[in-house]
Length: 305
Length: 327
Image 1 (cartoon, rainbow over the protein chains, first blue to last red):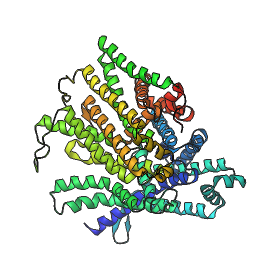
Image 2 (image 1 turned 45 degrees about the horizontal axis):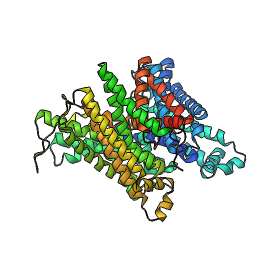
Image 3 (image 1 turned 30 degrees about the vertical axis):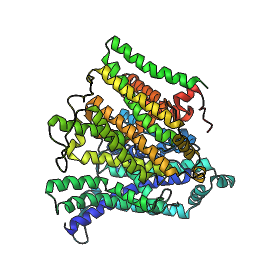
C-alpha cells in the first residue's frame, strides 16, 4: 500500500465524515433540545439535493443551487415542525418513530411523483472541478477538498453559534430545562421551530454537496440517516462535539476499512476469497465499532449517562 | 369491556371464512393475499412480544425476518443443486423439508436475537431504537456484499418446500399451514402475557426500579422476550420466503423493519390481535390504493400519520376502547 493512496483515502474518509457531521449535528441538536427522534431527517437531505439539482438545472449556477438547498430544506423542516412534529414532543419515542416514518413515505413518494424515478444529476461547477496538487505531490479532487473545508467551516460556525450567541444560550438552556426558560419569557415554540429548521438546513446542505458526487435520487437520504444514527450513538446523543468526533471516526473507519481489510486478508488468503471476506467485513466495520463503543461506554463517547 | 375478544374471534374466523369462500369460487389470488396477511401477522406477533409486552422499540426486526428467509433460501438452494452445505467436520446437506427449515430458521434467528439483544439491551430509549436499526443495516449490507448466496440479486427456489402429508403448492394447503402456525403463535402470546414471566416483563416496562427492588433483573427478562420475539419473526421470514419462493436482501432492509412495526401499531400495540388486524389492513390498503395510484405510499403515510396523531391505541383501540389493563 503506497503512502499516496493511503493519504488519498484518509482525505476521502475525512470528507465522508464531515458530511456525516452535517447530518448528525442536526439530529443530535433536535434530540438534545426537543427530545425528538426524527427519522425524516434523511428526507430533508433528499429535499436539499433535489432543490439544488433543480435550481442548478434551471439557472446553471452552483452557488444559487446551494442557497436553494438551504432554503428548501429549512422551509420543509419548518413546515413539518409546525404541522406534525410539534404534536410529537410530548409523545413517547414509539409515536415519534412511527409519525416520522410516515413522513418519509410521504416525502419519498411525493418526490417520486414530482421528479420521477430517474436520478437527477448535479454537476460540479467548473471552478471547482479537476485535481489539485497537495504538498507531497498528492493529486486530490478540488471539489472534495472544498467539501471538507465547507464542512469544517460550518462545524466551527455551529460551535460558535451554540457557545457564543444569544440564540445558542437559549438552545442550551432549552436542553436543560424547558419550563424554566419558557417562564423567563423565551418563546419556546418559536425556538423549537428555529432549531428544527436549522437542523434541516444543515441536512439539505449536505444533500446538495454530496449530490454533485453521487446521483440525486429518491431514497438517497435513508442510508445516510442510519449512518448518522451510528455517529450519534458513538458520539453520545445530544453532544455536538460527540457528533463531530463520531462522524470523523465513522468516516475514516468505513473508507479505510474498504481499502485495508481486503489487503489485509490477501496476505494469507486467495485473492478472490480475500476480496469477498474483506469487503463483507468492511461493510460491517462501523457497526462493529459501534458495538465496541457501546460495550465500553453505553452512553457514547461524550454522552451524559 | 367484552368487545375485544369478540372482535378478535371475528377477525380470526373472518380470515378463514374469506379463504374458504375464495377456495369455493376458485380465486387463488385472494388465498395468496390471505396467506401473506397470516405470515406478516406472525412477524408482527413476534415484534409485539418485544414491543408490546416488553416496551422494547426495536426497529431492527427485519434481521430476524431476513435470517429466517435466508435459512430457507440457503437450505433449499443446496438441496435443489444437490451440493452439501458443509462437508467438514460433519456432512450437512440442504433440505426441502419445511419442519427442518423452520427449526433451523428459528434457531438461527434466536441466536442472532440473543447476540443483538445482549448488546442493545445495555442501553434503552432512543439509543435502543437507533442501535437495533443499525444492526439491521449491518445485516442488510452483509447480505448484499456476500456473493455466495446471490448477493444483491437474492436467491430463487424453483419448487416450494414440502410438508409431510400436504401438497404445499396448493394455495389452500399452504394457507392452512400458515394459519395454524399463526394460531399457535397467538395462543403462545396470550399464555405468555398472562404468565408470571409476562407480568414481570410488563412490570419492568412500566417501572424497572420497582421490579429490581423485588429482586427481578429486568435485563434478563427483556433478553428472553427479545430472543423469543426474534424466533417467531424468524419463522415468519422462512414462511414468507417459501410463499414467494424467493429471498433477497430486501427482507433485511430497514423498510421491512418499519413495516413490521406499522402492522403492530396500526392494529394496536400490546393487543393480542393488533398485528393481525394491522397486517390485514395494510395488505388491504396496499391492494386498494395500489390500484388507485402508483404513488399509494403517500396515502399510506397519511393514514399512518392520522393513526399516530389522532387514534392512539390503533384500530382495536378505536373499536374496542381503551385497554382493560390498569396501566
